[in-house]
Amino acid sequence: KAGVTQTPRYLIKTRGQQVTLSCSPISGHRSVSWYQQTPGQGLQFLFEYFSETQRNKGNFPGRFSGRQFSNSRSEMNVSTLELGDSALYLCASSKTGGGTASYNEQFFGPGTRLTVL
Amino acid sequence: GENVEQHPSTLSVQEGDSAVIKCTYSDSASNYFPWYKQELGKGPQLIIDIRSNVGEKKDQRIAVTLNKTAKHFSLHITETQPEDSAVYFCAASYLDAGGTSYGKLTFGQGTILTVHP
Image (tube, rainbow over all chains, first blue to last red):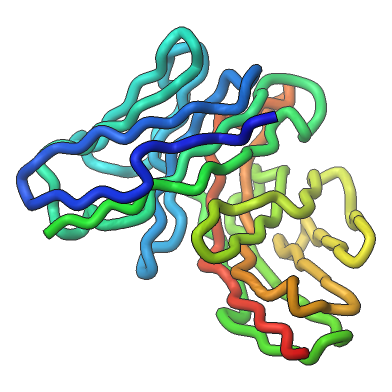
């Protein structure tokens, strides 16, 4: 079956702009998590959505926001971009909920490479 | 919050040798420990995971061990092959009584493994 898809794959923006990234989870997966990956900070959790509700949130400023639609697709938005927001943004989906650890296995997409100039 | 330390940051081995990567975690509530492999241009891919009620788990050439008392866990790769070359990440998470993780994985800084033919 198709994996997690993220669009666009590459994005270049300038400081002060805003950006929206999209993630389509694996069919049947209801949980979508977002991570930021940078050489300095590594992989950091942004937030997780399940059934259109944010269930968990990392330690990022309010400029980072997200949402999830009824078909489980998710978007994240970054407003007032800063140079430090340049990163690979990864989306992961999982079945989530109950029972075995396999329900919590997160399947990652290829990421969106955001460059802020 | 949870903090995961991973060592070494780089590891170079000859084909056929074994490779060991070690991680320590800080939050005793963490009870789910996945390992991910990330190849260039791709998102992380789960290679093995372990829950805290198990001390060791094997899958062909890959094994993970967990010491809850010392709060550390390790990845062992035997008979390494050039295609094992990648960045490996350990992670820690908490699964509630129902087995739900709410998405958040705390990652180590990663280990660049190079297997020389």
